[in-house]
Image 1 (cartoon, helix red, strand yellow):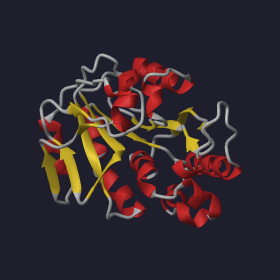
Image 2: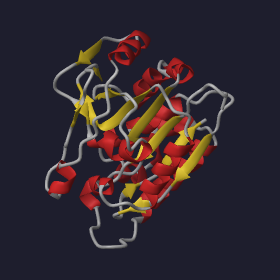
Image 3: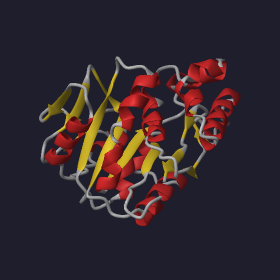
Length: 259
């Protein structure tokens, strides 16, 4: 990585409970936060904000979104009061040559973002802007759109994408220490192998991998954020696995960076 270029990071965020239950993944995020050069702001692409068209949060004080149900009150009590950055929102709109909605009221920082950010930057003192996922785009179109964000890395903006490479809620195993499904391991290992070999086209067209891919990605919104980080890889850069693992049978916790 050049001395001035910020890395791009993908975090497998997993269960909302990780926000109040520390584990090896949250420890890895906290360690990463200590190693990163402090950014001027963070652009987050979260699996939990899928929209019609492309939206960007543009408010100076984004609210903390608790976009889940059925969890302990302690989770709903969490606030992540990071400031926003209308200037970064304008810059993102400038870079993307598609219509962009500057959202100032309805959204904020959702749990796909703050459940990771609270470990990376626990003081919530770095401005945060969220970019939505346009649900009408294909994986290839998301990848192409993400490439347009590349200049931000040279402007000291950390790009953080949050999702899960394997994310099948219908097959979750709730018991403690649950063994992961063979298909989940197979696809997670396939992703890491292809990423390490810089085979991005294979990962864009993930459905060609067969049954393991379709079971791992029953809906694509948790997978798309990983493509945003892959798309930002420059010729002089490599991917680096920061932590890996499968939880609850069918949730990948793979976290990786491009630098």
